[in-house]
Image 1 (cartoon, rainbow over the protein chains, first blue to last red):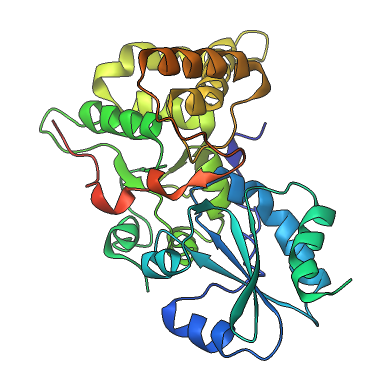
Image 2 (cartoon, each protein chain N blue to C red):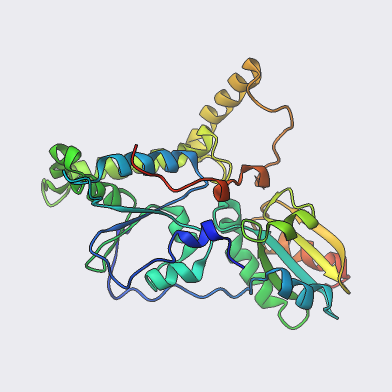
Length: 124
Length: 195
C-alpha cells in the first residue's frame, strides 16, 4: 500500500462523464433527440465509486450512440426527488426526454451495465 | 449548482496553508466521530488548531483546486492529510501525523517513527488498525461505505440480527449494493467544532 503520494504524482484524472445540474439536465436530457443514460450518484457512495470505472468503460464504448451523464443527488436534491431516486447508484435511461428504463444498485461488471443501459433502447 | 455546505468544505482554500488539512467523509458516522476527536485534541495550548479538519464535500473541482493530485473517489476511500510542504499522507500515515501534531497524543506518536531492521513495526500495526476500522465501518451503520469486507461480514450479520431482535432496525429490508438516499444528511450537519 502506498502511504505517501510523491510530488511527482500525476494530476488526478478528469471525469469522462459530464455532470448535470437542473438547467443542463433539461437541455441535455429532456430535450435530447437520442438515447441518454443518467447516473444518479454521489461521491460519498462507495458503491458509486466501485461502479465508476465500469461506467466510464461503458460510456466510452457507447459514446457515439448513447450520451451518458451523471447527477449528484447530494447537490441536485430536487432532481433526485423529481425522479424518485431512492438511493445510489441509480441509472435512468431516457429516450426523447421520457424515462424508458431504470437500474438500481451496483453492477460490478461492464457486460451487465452495458446490457442494463442498452436494452431499454433496443441497442445491442 | 453546488449546495453551500458541500462547497464550504474546501472553497476557502489558499494555495498552501501552514496547518495540515485533514479531509474526512462527512457521510460516515465513524469518520465524523474521528473528525470530532481530532478537532478536540489537535490544538496548541492557546487553543489554536494544529490540524484543519474539513469534510470532503461533493465538488471534485474544488478538491483539485486544493491539490491537483486529489481524486475525489480516492479521497473518499482513505483518509487524506495535506501537509504544508505539499506532501499528501494517506490512511495510517495520516493518522500517525495527526497524532504527532496533537499535543495530548505526542506521548505515543513517536512510536510510529521507530525503525526495527529497516521496518516500522508500530506504524505497520497502525496501518493494520486503520484497515480494520475502515473495513468495519458498514458494520457500525455507515450506509454509504459500501459492503463490509469479507472478514467482517459475520460481525455485520450478528449486528443485524441483534438489531432485529431488539427492534432497533427498520423492518424494510435494505437492498444490496445500494446506498439509500435517506442516509444522506451532510447538508444538515455543521462541521465539527471544539467541544
